Length: 255
Image (tube, rainbow, N blue to C red; front, side, top):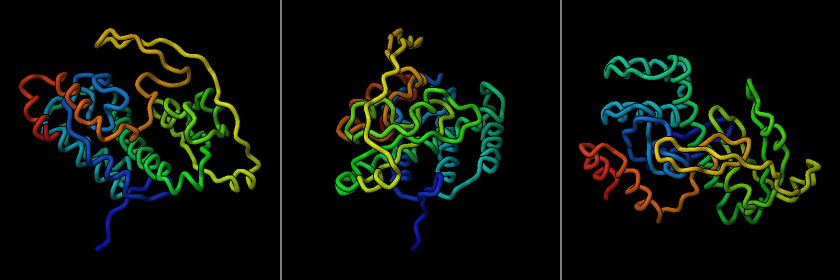
């Protein structure tokens, strides 16, 4: 029987589907309730606190990833879910639906790409990673500057700069062999150093140091968190969920 494949850009694969389907629904009040590697294990929609509504959103996004549902088709699901649960969300319909749609699809795609690119056989043949700027309406100058940067796959720069690097970021990472580099006239260089800035998490009061050019919460690699860290990360996320919903989340997480 044929299986569904996720496709974002021109590369279909199963890893993105597996990544998204492994996520546990986490009710949240605000976008920064989950940050960085939390998103490897938790599915959230900022301001969505009803479990049933999260279930419906997760199903709609799953269809978008597995069947290639367009943004306009997803907006029909968005309208239905909002109406059904009487959800009062922040921002305009167009903006909010696109953020939910694009953020989940892009992070799932990039998590899947990371799993592919770090396969030992792939790494042995394509040990070089290229930062490639996406076709954005409002390109970020740092991302344009990084485009064309080639570094070894194990360079620490990728820990914070693996894409996407912010809301709406369409940049991507491409794995290349030494022969690819020669053919394209590219060479392995040095990691850019653009400095950092401090961001205060208003929820926790924690001050985080983030590389310039990257939005708060996006200085991580989707899909990199090791499976053995899942229980620890999930327990921290569950502690932030309203007490009356913790048992539900714990059960779904198998904890």
